[in-house]
Length: 363
Image (cartoon, rainbow, N blue to C red):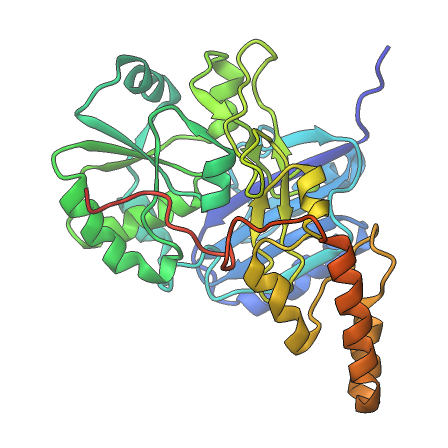
C-alpha cells in the first residue's frame, strides 16, 4: 500500500483592509517560525498572499492561528486550498511586507474588490470552450512561460509583458475584445480579481474571471480542454494535471524546438529568465538562455552556482573584489571552461528571454 505524503502545501490569498500590516508581519513570522513551517507570506494594506508547507499538525495549527487573527479568520475554503506533497517545498520561512500582494502598481481596497466581483463557473467555461463560441474570448493572465507550458484550449496570452503597463493593456483590450464576453483566468485568480477593479474603473464591463482555479476545472472535467502542463510555484515547477489519456505536451525547447514539459532558469543572474528547455539541451548550452547572457558574464561574472557545476562563481567574485589583480586569470579560466562546455552549442536567441511578446494585439 502506497504511503500517503506527510506534508501539505497550502496556497491562499485574501483582499482585506489592514491598518497595521507591519504588526501583522511580525506576528505572522513569529508564529510560523515557532511551529517550523516553511514558505512565503506577503502582507500589505490590501491583504495577504501565502504559500506554505508543513506536516499535518503544523498545517492544522496554522489554520487555527488564522481563525484567531482579526484579518484572516474568514479565509474561504482553506481545506480545499491544501494539497498533499512529498516534503517541504521551501528552504525557509519568509514573511514580508509588500505594498501590494499582487503588483499592478495600484493598491486596492476590500470594498473595491467586492464591488467588481464578476465570476463565471468552471461549468460555463467548459461550455464556452466546447462550443467554440466566437462571441467569447478566453484570456490567460499569467506570465509568458506559464502560458507556453500549458493553457486552456483557445486561450490567448495577456498583452502586457509586465503589469506596469496596465493602462496601455486595458486600451488594447478595449479595442481588440470589444463586444465579446471575456473570461480571464490565473493560476489562482488573485491577478484576475485585482485587474477586475482596474477594468471597472475604466468602464470596461465585458470581463469576467473564472471562479476558482485551473486545478478545480481539471479535477472535475478530464476532457483535454487544458493543453500541456501547469506551472506551479514550488519545487515541481511543471506539473501534469490530466490523466494519461488526455495529457498533451505543447511547450517547445528554446534551443532545439523539441516538445518538452521541462522548465528552468537562465543562470546569468541579472536575466534569470524562466525558459522551457529539455534537460539535455539546457546543460549543453551551459544553462544560459541566449547568446547575450552567455557573453555578458565577462563584465560581472554574475553566473549562478549550480549543484552540477563544480565551479564556485560566488567565491571567484569574492576573490576579484578583494584582490583585483586576480581578475584576469579568473576570467581566462572561466572563459576556457565555457568555451569547452559549449563547444557544439548554438544559441537560437541573440537576446535575453526574460521578456517576450507572445500575441499580436494589433490584429
